[in-house]
Length: 276
Ligand code: FAD
Ligand code: A2P
Image (tube, rainbow, N blue to C red; front, side, top):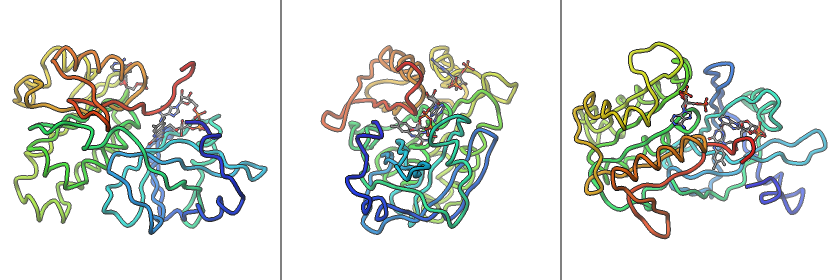
């Protein structure tokens, strides 16, 4: 998606797409999350993304794709963002404060939705970096647990501090009133969390591809290996990550699906990398 795809037809439209920032949390010097008001008419499926942005110095919108990190029942919208120091949008976005306005084009789309998968027993969320954002939405959606007996969240970053947003989110989920009411004490066993680092020593280490290929993840969590009969997956990371994880899942016998053709796994890029 380019800015041109989502460019406003009139200045009036920009005005009507303004939402107010309600809170901002900085996790590291490269990562932050924020919440904004939700347009009353905005409906989305957990896992989808929208275009958000800020005006440039001439008032022209700089828009980028962002996964909605909050679940579809939430009154507000949450986003989890990188800070690219010379990035057209995030060099500015990283400075937003509560009360500021951002542009939000209310047209949610995306492939990481429950409807794009065939029914199954266990759902794997495989993410690196900010690729956890769509799963932050899906992990907080009760429908995920209605459809799957078990959810496994594998999140890998270079360093431990980059895992903090996901770690806190999963911790809070265990105390979530809605999920607690629905699943009670059982909930801990329904959501398995497997964070790893690759460039800093931590309790669990290694790339997602390596931990799947070696079988270490199955050993550590006491699960059978991934099989097309029982397991479904969603992938969100850099292009290189997505390509490599896709190959691993295909080795296990899973096939890529889409909204129009549900199968055993779906993929979405967490960002458009250089030269892609
Ligand atoms: P850009 O010019 O867009 O990017 C500059 C460079 O920074 C890129 O070439 C790439 O190398 C790197 N980069 C950009 N985004 C990331 C990232 N997220 N992680 C690591 N490196 C990155 N970004 C988010 O922070 N959170 C999201 O939830 C999110 N969802 C997305 C969903 C989709 C479908 C797509 C295609 C992209 C998504 N992005 C997300 C990326 C986002 O659209 C922007 O690229 C990002 O906000 C940086 O914008 P920018 O204008 O500052 O820099
Ligand atoms: P590694 O440190 O071994 O490269 P990045 O910051 O480069 O986007 O990487 C984020 C995380 O994703 C890092 O932990 C990185 O591991 C991992 N990663 C990057 N590329 C791949 C890939 N092709 N397959 C599996 N993991 C990857």
